[in-house]
Length: 335
Ligand SMILES: Nc1ncnc2c1ncn2[C@@H]1O[C@H](COP(=O)(O)OP(=O)(O)OP(=O)(O)O)[C@@H](O)[C@H]1O
Ligand SMILES: [Mg+2]
Image (tube, rainbow, N blue to C red; front, side, top):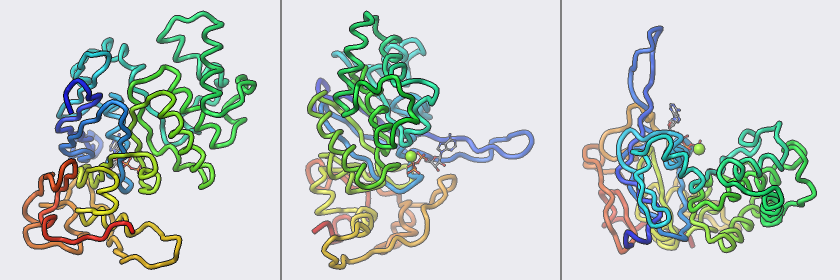
């Protein structure tokens, strides 16, 4: 991808959170939430990020939107032909860029101010970042409500007067009203029941075309990500363990963790998959295992896996994996 086309480049991103102990709050260690994360995103791309709870998905989105500053590494964002290293900008420079990177949080209950009416929730970002006349403001609010499938006549209601699915639509509308170049969606459907999940996914698909969106979709549900994203990153304990086009990752996974995630998807035809049960829990990110961090749970591990950290390497064009045994293993994918 030429530099011109890239919207986002994340280079060697590390995020460590200090852990404090005792009355004097001495730093006793660090939660290694993200460890050397690298990827690039092109304009118009939908990137899916999958991994178990605690693997650093939200931390990654929060650092891209500069809510959590990186400990090390670079986040390069491209906008209107200019490149910005987000973590080197001043506060005022960041404020100017804010409209271009928007985030939708997992839980629409806590992300929408319950004391603000929908009108204020949607008009406020516009009033802060663009000077529009009252009638233009009204048009934009009405237009976005129609786009996300809500009735514009409900504009003076409060968030609690909507259902969970509708609240998530309001959150999406609030993120989109500034026409961002990059939209970050943190588990946008996980607080919703299955039928509402499908509706929100269909809406996101429609909005992608309508607003020519570039977005990152985070989920612990492989099915959700597969539906919308052409490219996928699989994360484990703050690291990318596999990345590639969705088809390649789902049908020919190269990392044992990806295989285990795929095999855990229930099949509708009742046929059994080769069930690989992920043993144990995700290790503590304060003291991650030596070598490959997945080795304590890996059914294919060898001696080298405990000693040497595997690097992300190309297995074919656009498909990368960090596993010492990637060349020799024949893993089961979807199908
Ligand atoms: N502000 C913080 N202070 C200390 N540790 C944190 C902080 N935020 C996140 N962490 C830790 O960083 C790790 C990654 O957390 P994160 O919320 O990014 O995971 P996640 O993949 O989004 O999980 P989930 O699927 O449950 O939302 C976890 O071990 C978490 O406890
Ligand atoms: Mg999260």
